[in-house]
Image 1 (cartoon, rainbow, N blue to C red):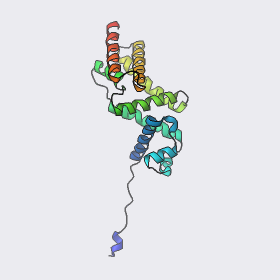
Image 2 (image 1 turned 90 degrees about the vertical axis):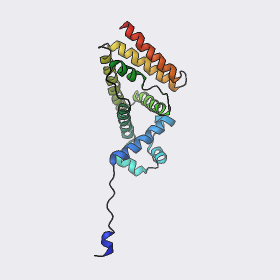
Image 3 (image 1 turned 30 degrees about the vertical axis):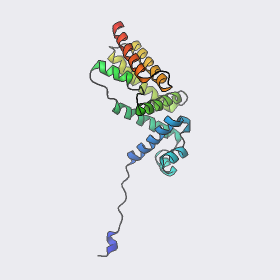
Length: 190
């Protein structure tokens, strides 16, 4: 046999999910640092050191990129914040997990709230966000023995505290304590 018979290169196996995840991570970073309007193919390519061709191979449009990154974000958040079996702990987790107490939580909250704002005018994102919010509301309602009004009140209060923490009006520890207090008050009145 000739030595060149052994010099054939085996095609590299490409992990498509991993490549999409790389793009998602770059999108999240751009959103957290510069806002959702800054997400462009060129910006993703530059920030992620990824060719524009590779990005377009996986996502034909900016809209497709944003939708995929949001869906991936929600899946990652569900994995990172599993709902405990104990109903009291589950409610506490549901209402406090988004409080930005560290850099990772701050990045996550900034991404989520940017998507919430964008969903107001983007029908594709709106449907994904609505489904996620419905699921959260349904879970909170179930944890509160079917009291949807109380669930909405607590979720809205938690959202408000997270938002105020993000813009620097309320420290994370204060937001956490306030939400815990609201849960206690809610238990006493329900």
